[in-house]
Image 1: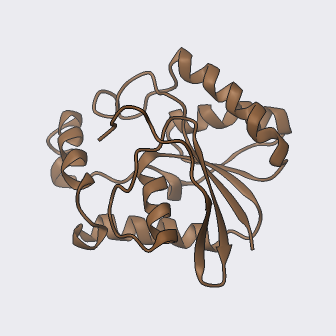
Image 2: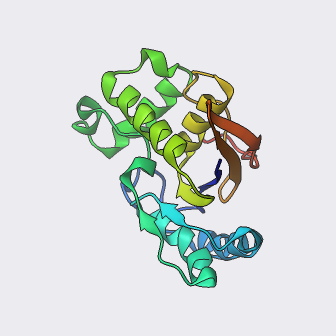
Image 3: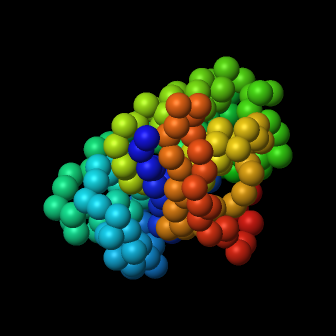
Length: 186
């Protein structure tokens, strides 16, 4: 059994429908340092991160405190944009995300269902306590897998909040929820 800490990245310098891969805002950088002070007590343990800049930058303060190098894993990237939406440009991503936020994974195209299955498979196969810096939709997918809830969005995880899961013989178990955002993301 492993304990997994899924951390939503700190506040980015731009919205997801303005920049495909922004770094952190100044506020986000400060929050990532504060988060590292809070998480420092649980490790050192492996750190995995999404390849997206905002997640990698959020992981750095903790990695530096522990003196380790985070491992980048595409499995923890944000939900993929279907090609027909991506072709319309970055501004189309926001309305698409808002539309699917009220839906269920079972009704999504195969690209989205495969993303979720791959993500959950990676989480279930993790064998040691691990901190994972990731995104809004990843946390929702993990939360759904742990609570047997097929909704795409279950809650609005706040920046730098972390959710604790354990791997079990039956899959994922939720240990504790992170903070919910005070403003609606989607």
